[in-house]
Image (tube, one colour):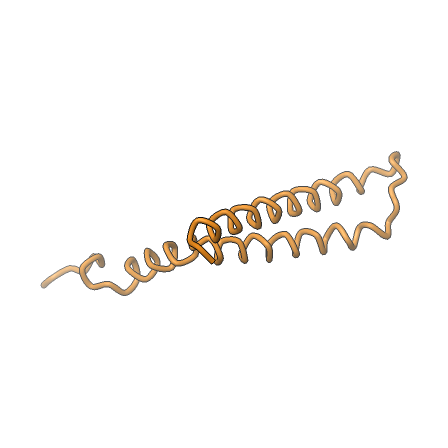
Length: 89
């Protein structure tokens, strides 16, 4: 897969994941109102939608190449001797 196509696919997956997470949280909140008479069966699917949305978000970040940047900075911050603040005595 070409780099441009991978970035586009990653962004699409991240967008779909975000929409699924927001919809799942929204339905879980709206489902708490007793006046709306929403089916309780869909409550579990809303929670599963939040989980699947998070997995899609992470898959999109991995495909789009955004995961490595964060890992690199975390590695530099915690383990690179040049970037650590150590007092020389």
